[in-house]
Image: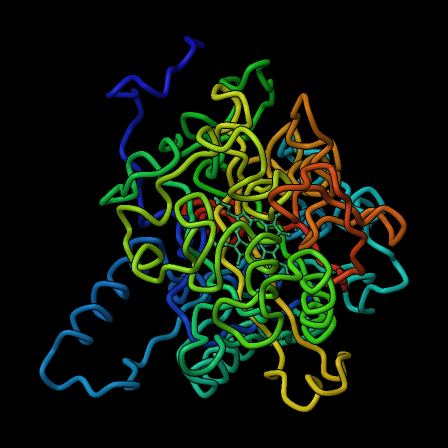
Length: 479
Ligand code: HEM
């Protein structure tokens, strides 16, 4: 296959068929609340036959775009009252490797991590198995992703799915999340705006705002240009024809220890920035330290643009909020090498022929209650965190979730910088409690290492394959 240069203006690829792609994959559902219904297939033949009743309920990428447009139009209409929501429901389905086996679908999808499942990958991911919730230690065959802007919308859709599938499945667990209330909507539980940077996908994203180079659709969708071979050195994988337009879904149930994170910020900020007032939100040392662990301020403003203070105008400007690389900061003055966004998307700190193949689409949602009294007690009482979801055409193979978690987040030497060992991603990197250090938390003391407790605990997860609509009709369902 000819080498593809991403600078080439017209990369040869057929247009994406958005009615063939499940709706959560390319951009994530528009949603206020989402339930992940994990199931086991108890009667494969019956399941395959009943699946045909579910397929018309599956929300495609095309329908998701229409829903977003409707929401926009509604918000700008005269009838709109703040806080009001259009009733929407969205449904997707994905299968684990064991689920495919049970259905008799034995073609090799060409991905080792998917094949072995997340439980077998857990230790390599840095997880502590005894901290996993029981559900994820069992054999899960599939997951329905049910999203809506109201709990009643979710219940209604789940009832439809369950009545259509009858006894052919057993519901193992329903795990639910919701966006946070008020001005914290779009912010994860540590308080930082999430879902800002997402890959611009050639043939899909429109408009494309300034930022990292657009990626080929095959980085997310199997069987499309950019799926196999183009990365340097090339990845040679055979994909069955029916896998085209499908994507691997990595699900992670990540608990966030919010009071512990805030306590650490206050304590460390006093030590690192003794001249800045430590308490209080705006302009405080704790706020600066928090921003340096993420690489963005709570508003979403990147430190690359404003490294002394938050600037919500930059955060809200799509021409600016993703338009940076780290070339202008060869050291750690603006943000540490191990800041979450620099580890997870190293921009100019990664060879330009690799990075465009190593991106993922994130589509998670927070779960659990808001922090209240725990702030005073400074330790977590109620379970809360992030139901992390990401899509990619490879889970390993030098790209995709498993690779990023193991070789970027968990590797203190990444990104490779001659003068420094960056350290761990303090947000999602995990290497056991003994190795939780990073450099550059303080702008002027590049080599100082700071030991931090864990703020995120993995409660488990699973790898799934989210097939195309055509595959669901022709490969999965029987009439
Ligand atoms: C509870 C755990 C996590 C929290 C609270 C969290 C939060 C955030 C926030 C606030 C941002 C910046 C806003 C944005 O650009 O969307 C971000 C970016 C990102 N995160 Fe996470 N994240 C978590 C786990 C993970 C994991 C497990 C991965 C993958 C292994 C990951 C990959 C990314 C990527 C790729 C970006 C975009 C970086 C960029 O393009 O600039 N995150 N995350």
